[in-house]
Image (cartoon, rainbow, N blue to C red; front, side):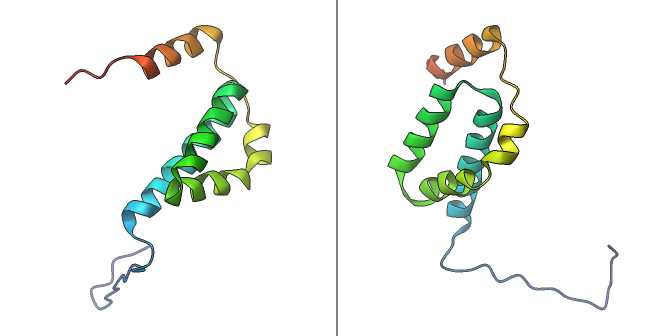
Length: 97
């Protein structure tokens, strides 16, 4: 890559696919794939179901993750029981403002 003072590039994002929806799609897809690699199966299934119920970009993120399981499964290294316990505590902890 290089800087060219004589070159101008313009980006015109699709009006049909807003940046917020794209971001939600990618966040959902990546979170689900990470869960496949590190979390117990009930957690993975729960997250997938939640994304499907949410619909929209979250649902498309779940479906996109479903096309990549062989790669995620090859990298599967579940966290230890101690780490999983702490992750569950974190997920249920009240949010303090």
